[in-house]
Structures are given as C-alpha cells and as structure tokens.
Amino acid sequence: MSIPSDVYGVVEIGSNGVRFVVADLPQDYRARNLAPLFYDRAKISVFDAISSNSSNTIPPGVLFDLRHAIERFNKICGSLNVLSRNISVIATEACRRTSNAGELAQMLHLINPEWSINFLSQEVESNYGVWGIISSLSDVQGITVDVGGGSCQISWTYASKDIVHLAPKPALTSFGAIELSNRLHTVGENQLKRELISSFQRAFREIQVPAHWNGVTLYLCGGGLRALAALSMYTQSQHKPYPIPVINGYRCTMEDLKRLVEISINESIIEDLEKVFRISKRRAMQIPALLVLVRALIVTAPSIISIYFCQGGVKEGLLFEKIPPEVRLMDPLVTSTKRLAKPASAHILELVQLVTPPSLVPLYIFERMLPAVAYSAYEHMNYSKDTRATAALIFATFGNLSTAYGLSHIDRALLGLILCERWGGDVMDDEIKDGLRNVVIKECGGSSVYLFWGQYIAILLQILAGLFPVGIVDDNNRVKAGISGSSTDLLINLSFARGDPFVESINFRIEKLGKKLMKLRKKHNISDFPRIDVRIGVH
Image (cartoon, rainbow, N blue to C red):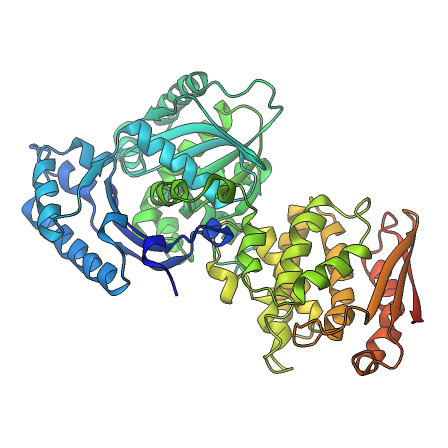
C-alpha cells in the first residue's frame, strides 16, 4: 500500500486540455517509472476559449467546466488519501495570457483552500518539459522540441549515468500546434516554412548546442507531434497494426522522417487519418501544419541522426523533480522489472552472466536487458501452458508492463520476445511476434545481433530458471556455470548436482541445449556470431 506522503497529484491546465495525474513516488527505485495511480484528461481548451473573444478572458462557461473537472479530481485525491500539500496545480501558456487569471485562482481556492495555482513562466514551463523528456527514456542526449498548443520550446539536454545538463536557457517561439494551423491557413505553406526556418535558426543559436556533438538525436514531445508518431508507426508497418500501442519511446531514423514529411495531405486524406490509431479529428486537422514544422526542423537542426517521440511533458517533469537525484538516473527498464523479482532472480542473473561473454555481447543486452529478463523470468509461471508464451510476448506491450513509463520500443519488443522464448515460444498467432522482431531488427539497422543474443539468453533461461521453478533458491549447489573459448568458438560449461530431482525433471531440456544453440547460429546465418558448444557434467 502506498504511504500518503509518497503520493502526489498534479493538475495541469494546458492550452488544449486539463490533465490530472496521481502518482506513487516512494523514495527508492520504484519512483523512477512515475507509477500512476490515476490518470485522466478533460477536453477543455483554454486556448480556444480565450482566442474566441477580444477581451482575452476565460468565458464563464469554460470556468464552470474547469471547476467541475477540478472538483471531481479533488474528490478522487481524497479517495486515494493524497495529502493536500502534495497536490500541485499548474497553468501553462494559455492561462498566462488570460486577463482574468485571478478568477481562476479564486475558484481554485474555493475548491480546496490549501491549493494555489502556479502560473508557470515560459522558461520554467520549458525546463519542466525537458525534465519530462528526460524521464521518458534512459540516457537522453540531444535536442528537445516540445510543441504545445500555444508555443514551441526548444532546448538540449545530456542525461546519462551520473550527470544531467540542460541548456542554460531554452528558446521559445509562438508556433504552437494551434497557431501553426491558423498561420498555415492564413499565409500558406511556403511562407510558413520560411517563418519557421527563421525562427528555428534563431532558436538553435540561442540554445548553443554543444559543439562536440557530431550528430544529434531529436526528442519530440507534445500531442501534435505524437500524432505524427502515430502516423509514422502506421506507415512504417505498411498499414498493418503496429505491434506496440504506446507512443513513448518510438524511434525513427532521419530517412524515415524525410519520407514522412513528403506525404501530401488534402481533405480526403485528413478524413482517412482520423481512422489511424491515436489520431483524433483535432490532431488530424493539425497534421498538415506540423509536417511543415518538421520540414523546417530538418533544414535547420544540426546533423540529425535519429528521432525519439516522448510522452513526458510538464506534469511528468514536475513529478520527476520530486524524486531523489540518484533515482532519476536509474535505468527505467531495470527499475520497472525489479519489482517483479523473485528470491531466485539474482541467482539466475548471476548464472546467465557467467555463461554470457561480455566482450561479445552488446552492452545494451548485457547491462540493461539481461537484468530485466532475470527479474521478469517468473512473471508468467502461474499461467497455463497454453497461454504462457503468448502472455510473455505481449507482456511489455499489452500486458502488466505496458503501463511502465520510460521504456523504448526496442525495450518492449525484445523483452517480450526473450520471455516468450523462455516459455517455449509457441504462440497462437505469429503476426505480433513477427512485428516485434521487425521492430528489433530495424532498431539494429537491419542486423539480427540483438535477436541472436536474446534467443541465446532465452534458451539458457529454460534450463537455469527451470532448476528453481517457483523462484526460490533452496540449494546454491544445484548448478555450476562457466564459459571458455574465443570470439569464434564458445564453450559453455554446465555442471549439475548428481541425483537432484530438479535436475532430473528438466533433463530432456539439458540434453537438447547443445542442438538448440547450434540451430540458433544457423537460423541467423551470420558468420560474425560465434560457434557455441556445450559441455555437460555432474558434481
């Protein structure tokens, strides 16, 4: 059960909507994933409301809708035992512009006398947005672009292991998603692109991107840009369902982005876009203008090598700042799975590491994926034999880990594939499996290296986790493991306790281990992968 002092609530009154979140942030590794206890969004556009009248005020009807939505959230916070002092109410771009902000503050005080509203300055809003992007993934380094309803904020960040740097001051423009659409209809595409290029050139001069970066990653955030991500996922999967519904952590290459912005949009296509998963009618209408924005980014941003789309925004950044600095720098893939660990998980991890050569295995696999797999190895042990492999396959995309925040698409795809093979790999429908494989191969530039080592780990898990079937280590002497050989010929040495009933119960798997590993190399048909042999012994 959550401790009330560790539970936080946020009301974010944005330009396009009002977002509500309650998150559990215990003072340990579990806080890294900003675990939500509740999340909701009210479709109240303050930007549209104040733009529709010359007095620049929030109309009474919109104030009524805001009050109703916030009163509801206040009661939800009471049900979840959220302390009033742990609830933050923040207002962004649109509310800064309104002339009756005092009425909004007074209304809030009537709902809860302990609350006050924080009208964020553009700089503070931008910095919260950058922290939100940092919270979205592991090891963020690059240029951040956050397109809200009323503004576009550009900055850079470097966050990895033990250090976090932000641009001294973000660059701010008025080209939010709503203003972009209005401007496109007023001046046309060519003029808008020229204005955007000029604005972005100034912005990149202002933020002073570190000179030693020989190519940058773009981190794109904001509802409109996430709609572009949904469109990209749809086109990348050749109009088949993309196997991962979560937008956060989706990556595309510069070539992918260039193909995306070449799409010509007319009214009939806009109607078709509304049928694409995660693209609403409102966002479909904004896509033509957002494509112009991305075309301008491609021209002006320095040496783009890849693009990530992020879910984290202002509210996530605010929550992320509340957790201990050492927790912020933890790997979200590892922290999201660590809570699933059984007593045997650490022992399983040690055994697999002993037979996985760190000099040959990609660092991502050895340092990040291997712990996550070990911690998750027993998650599906109480499922029926018919459902284990399928449930494991979709574990991080549609299952219990789908809500885990901070994972990239390759994290979700490869974790599911490894756990699926750990339980035998037999699924009813191979379409999702093939789709996840394609995600991994694409992330590796067409290489099968991650799939090879992922299946290698899965095959070993079938043996090693099978020796401790309920996740409890009752005998440390059950198996001894080691590895020898070279980069071209590996020899796995496994010695099992003589007469141990747990060893006898999986003896059929042990006997097939060598053949499985030999087949694995032939399946991927890549000479760079080592030949693998197994020496089985008893002690």
